[in-house]
Structures are given as C-alpha cells and as structure tokens.
Length: 556
Image (cartoon, rainbow, N blue to C red):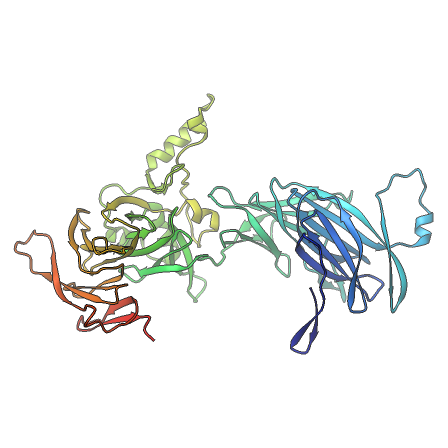
C-alpha cells in the first residue's frame, strides 16, 4: 500500500496487487536527474519489481530477473549520480543492480563487437522533462552458504560539504554469518572484506543486519531474539571484535528470584531458558550497568518456576514432571568475580558444593541434562587433538562442547549459548503432571513444589529435603492446581494458593528429635463456603515479620 502523510495522519493513496504472490521487502529512492520516486519490491517469485511514481500513483516499469528463490531484502544507495540496488535472496546470492541515466551519445560510442551486460530501458517524465534510464546488473555476490535474509548499505556521511555514499554493503544470512562487501580499489571487483558470526549452539542464523551511523559497528539480530554486535578496531583496519550488547528473554518471563546475598537475579521464561543477570562494575566507570552474564539452563521445555536453594544453587521446573537442581561451575564463579568485582575466595567460601567443583558444563547430543566437565576432560580432549594419528569419529565429534573462557565483560551470545551452563546435580521425581510452582524456605533446608492438576490426588504439595533430596511429605488439600507457594520468613509457615480459589496455611511442627526431618500440618484454610476470592488466586506473599500474608486474585 502507498500512503501519503497529511499532518499527523496517514492516507492510503494506492494499493499494488501482486495476485497470489506476496512482497517480502520494499525500498524507496529518488531517481537521479528527476523528481520522481522509484519503488523496488522483492517478491516470492524471485523478481525485483520496479515502480515509478507518476502523480500520486506508482506505475510498473520493469521486473529485474535473476534470483532463483524468494527475494528477502532490497535496499537503494545513491552513488556518483547513479542508483545502486542491492537485493538478497533465499538462493544464497546477493545481486547489485545499477540504475543510471542513459545518454544517446554514450550509447553510440559502444562497438557492436564488445560484449556488455543487458540493459533494461525505461523512460520517466517529470517536472524536469523526459529522461531515459537504464537498469543493468552490476555484480553477483556469492559467499553465504544459506538463505540471505538481510542487507544494509553503510550510511552516507558529509565530507567537504557533500554527502558521500561509501561503497560498503553488509549482508546477514541463516548460516550464522555477516559479510562486509566492498569493491577492490584497483580492479573494482566486489570482494568479501570481513566475515563475522557465531559458532556452535542450536540456533538458527541471522534475520537482519544494520550499520551504525558512522560505520564503526555492525549489528545482527537472530531468530531467538538475540542481538549480536561487532566493533571495528580503530588501530587495526579490517579487524572486528564482538561487543557488549543488551540481551534477555524473548519469551514470557514466568518466574524470577534474587540470590541469597542479593547480588544477582535468576529468571526463567517460556523461551526455555534460565538466565542470570548481574551488575557489571568497571574501574574506569562509576555507573554500574546490569547485563546477562550466564545462561545456566537451556532446556527443551518451556520453563515455569525456580527457587534459589543456596548462593550458587537453584531448582527449576518446566513443562515436565521433573524438578532439576543446578550448581554453579568454577569457570562461572571466576568470571562472576571479574565482572562484578567480588573476590573469588569470598564466592567459593559461600558455595555449598562439596568436593571438586566442575570446570564447566555441557549438554550431550540428544540430551537435556547439563553434564559436569572437569579439568581432566578438557586436557584429555586437547591430547587427543594433538596426536598425529587419524582421529576416530568419537574424537572428531566430542561430547564436550564447553570451552573455559576468562571474561572481564559480559559474554557475547555464542558464549552464553554453550560456555555458561551450570551443572545439573539432581532430578526430583514425584509429580504426576507438569511442575507449576516451587519455593524454598529461608534456611534453605526444605523445598516445596506443586504441579498442574485437575484432581485432588495430583494437586498435593510435595516437600523435599535439600540435604538428602528425599521426599519428606505430601500435603493434599486443594482440588486444582496450586499456583504459588511461599514460606514465611521465620520458616514456621507454608502458604499455598490455588486455582480452586482457596488458600491453605501449613505450620511446621517442632521436631521430636534434633536430627528428625521437618513436619508440616494444616493450620488454617478456606473452602467453598469461606473463600474470600471468587476467581483464581494467582499469587501470595508474606510480610517481613511473618505476621501477615497477602493473596492476589483475578477478582474485579
């Protein structure tokens, strides 16, 4: 659709129809030597359709043919009185077309024996008179190994009072790379100047790319919502390095929790990840900024809940019947120390892990559990690679994808995907349906969890010991899903709210013996007759002194 702006309103002046096909990208530019606008449309027929503005209407003049699959991106650039049109396609190719004023004198100078590219001729009549233009193929760029989804010309800049357009083109592809193209200074042939991208991870490639206004940074965005940025080294021409970029969940955040010391936040989301956010303290900067510095869990199910059970331990629940317990790795603790400015000794002293701390974690092929990677595993892989004998298939494709990295700034996306996982140390089985909520008491000794339920037998709350990971108690009462659990700050009560519009309060009994397990019994509850809420109760919490609790519902 074509629109005209009238004040703060927009008016549709024209609708261009392409039959049963559809357009994936459009771009507008002003023709050189004319007041007319030219519109380029990349379609699913593999053609680039050109339209010229006549009055308030656009009229089709040409279709540029060459791509063999959907044209995913088109963009104009003005250079030396000509227009350059870049187009990218799912055929893995990039084509650059040149639109220029075709002068009769120039045409007569050509010898018939000279081989030249085909020209598509069209005439444009505007206020400046009739002008003849020619469209020809400038070059074809082949370098990507998968669909090319985005292209972007380096923005023009002012020099000596003139606006100059650098001949530099950026492309992004599903092969997880971006390529910077530019013509060779001597031959004029377009060549690949720089290639950047990410390695590893179970992600798709890049969906789009962008230059910074001064051309010193390039940005790509990926299918999983992540941004990737590379910055040019000012001292070394042609060298680009990954930069710090904002990141976060690309699905709904379902739950979050502070660590016991209040230094970082863990969150889980419907994007099947658990992410850790912490402050980045730099010596030369007074301002502290928060960034994602680890992705402890990358799962195969949508995440639902989590609870911290120690300084560097947490329990998470997803759309599965299992609770999973995770513990931090040595590499994470060291990098956390460098980024946040906390000493490693203080961090390790508060870590509840006993015995040798794993160097990192890795997910084996076709697996969902983060397996521990020790320093011996890394050195063994190095020795196997250094041998001169032919490698077996097991050595060529190792199960350990973790690589220890030393970070002084928040990690880029490729490190987050595979080098910041935490070790899964335990699985807790007992629920009949998908886990929905989990909570841990203040002393970090008892864990409570509940699952989705439509019957009373499945709506029971299960209590676990964080020391032995054994099931302590099952607390049946509610008839539908328990939506949230909360221990009182003094650990004397457990509060539960449910889809059945009721709440229940469970009191911890004094243990008969010093080493006996905690025991909870029903202290108070509401039922259908005494219920205060008339709709589902979604949330609950305690006051700091454990004297009051609050509940939140869908009541109007």
